[in-house]
Image (cartoon, rainbow over all chains, first blue to last red; front, side, top):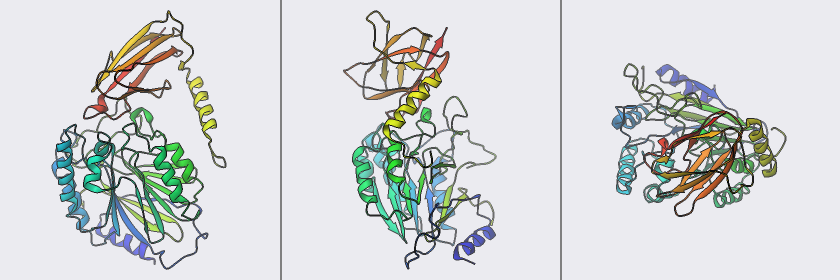
Length: 300
Length: 124
């Protein structure tokens, strides 16, 4: 039994595991020589925490993120790191309030036992000041890092209020990818979808097709994003795109209602539709498994 | 699209074909006597926010921002322009299909951005 299987078995026994979605990094199997760096690992994706939100769609918004932190800290299996795919804070026109919310967000996530955290902005964090407050608090809005044979790329498609990546960042991406083998496993982290999921609701990236064109020559690319506040899976040729749930309120399925609006809070099922995701990665054969978890642990 | 690279030209052709298939809006040179509909944009509303047009009758939409940069976007109709202060943006269109078409601001403009929308109603 692999370590990955063992870990899943533990989670299942604990009763905290959710729906599992398997996503192979197509073409990876058998084409990449295993190296000493290529060991299995897993990370968590948290998204759209919207710290500072107040409204009827989540009357417990002031404690939801803390509850998620408690849930994650209560699981004995530790991920290698956590990624936050944007909208850390809820937007405000007041720059001082924006910075206060970011400070409060940092204080809350500092309680996580997993200290390696990779963050990126959403439009609520960055679109009103071109990412200035975000950079003051969290650093660069786009960057790369490598982990156990996988190349991670965080892309910023929100500092431009029109929701574009921009030619300069696409050039930066192209230059970065020249240093990465065509067979190497690549994970792209971003906030808005890189494909036209539903542009009527701004569920797209203006120049997302250009980004995808740059990524397509690479055989093993998986995109994790947020923004749409629900689990969603899409394929652009061999590139898989996975949207994560929110940690504040859920949104309706793309185009399912005339106007986009948060789904109502269900007092009988608090935090329904909210949660975070675990991603198990096997760099050697390209297997990637997604498991969805609720905000609070529902059973022991 | 497997097996092929989508070039910018091909993408533009596909977009044009989609627009024709939708029977939406046709852009062409304007005539001097065509009616002009003035639309203002400010946080977080368009005025007017309901524009009634007649199918086949060309109009000019003249968009002007009263505060900051906004967007005027209707993917269904193939319209997407920036609306900026001090300089009106003009869009000529000939409605080719009956129906109600949503318009929204697609330049993130603040706390009320998500509700900044309008509709174009095309009647016979």
